[in-house]
Image (tube, rainbow, N blue to C red):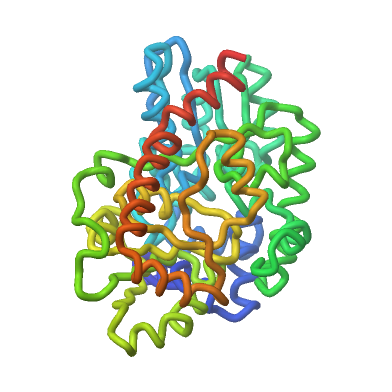
Length: 406
């Protein structure tokens, strides 16, 4: 029975943005209040049960990163820290959802166990209290029922045993919808039916990190508008998987355009095909929409493309764009000017993502197709940028300089 509900939950999670607003609110209720009626019912239907606990590394600096691991970033930040500094042993814990993308994690914990298992929560707390540093992702609680899913109580308990705590903001956990709508006319707010929820969460989380005064990091540059005092800890792309030799771009009869969408509404997926339809009809472009593709298959997806269309509505870029740039592909998307200026100030690089909005996308792709030499130069610039900014060194400098060694 639990496998049936796991499959149903996996389908609902993948198609969340297409579900009616009332169903989205039920899902949010279960996630926001695991001890409420919907949260308890969801835990029972998904099977509850136990889960592995995190191994404590033998190192002078013991870093615990939890609990979201978006796009596998918690795991990659942990590996980058260990590779760069022999003092550091790092582990990440990730709450996993039915049907998710199977990103690597040191300690994957099914959400049903996280929400319902007292024994798992107690054992995880006993392990983590032996770490020296804890990096909290997306302002989410880490110890399930042990502290009543109360992050403020968790931070107080960690600090009471001498552990240093910092926060890492990822996106809509801290992005203010009203400010975002002022920064870009393509903002997903207030059209997103989850806007009220995001507004409430962002303001609650900002109040928490402001009150506590701990070090704060953001994973994407646009979030500097929401948390000006935060340090940028760039997302990481695995060069072993994405940085190898790939076919040169624009060497086919048709321009291969790919869009990988984990959140069609949030990325503006619906704008792409209408904009490219004339180019597809003329035979200039082959367009592929990639959804629900396992992470292990993405290097081949990007290697088979010329242009990767990233996103339009967040006004920023994320892990998929970095992976595409590391693969030498031409990345096209909408990145707000305030984010582009922040990137150049922080890194000295001009962001090599070709600017486009849904209104200009057709023209931008046509111009790239008409000048393949320029397109190849942009692809190589993207590879250099991803190597310099998104392979871990910049992330390690941020974490060491603004927290561990500060």
